[in-house]
Image 1 (cartoon, rainbow, N blue to C red):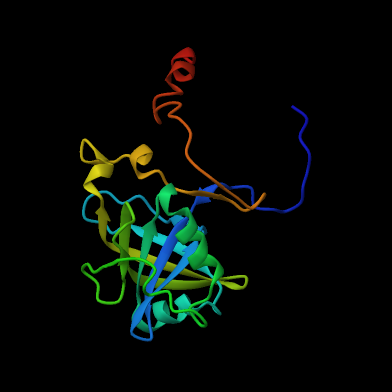
Image 2 (spheres, rainbow, N blue to C red):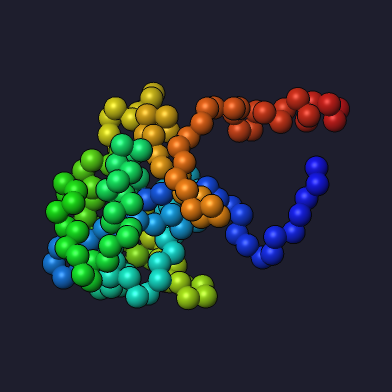
Length: 194
């Protein structure tokens, strides 16, 4: 393998493409965001936290700051055109409230997209500035999933068919095939140590 240095660039892509929902000026607003993260893996009674990275100038940011609530929606590949559209037009100039059918859940100001296979309602827990971006850390209040996207009661990524985003080459991708099981694929090497 011949490796080459390419500078201090993020190479964690592809990342999950999501649509963040927030209430702004009394109506739903949507924004495509691929800078999402899992902050912890909570078991039992402890809350789960997710993060989104947003420039403060975005219209959606104002709604999150005003109400302390937002949703993270995971669109399927069939929603690619609408997903891209809500990321290239601003809610400051375009009313995006009618693009998707809205589902309301537990939170009053975290509109969700009824057509998305998965939607997650979040309460704003903390805001951190990282460079020029606000990192909104949300406590998961509830997760909604289309029953058709469950296998044995758990989300099935193949059925969700999410959109992946590659910022390094500015491309959308889809999932490939299952290649192994975590905490299992390395057992052969572990057993060799004995």
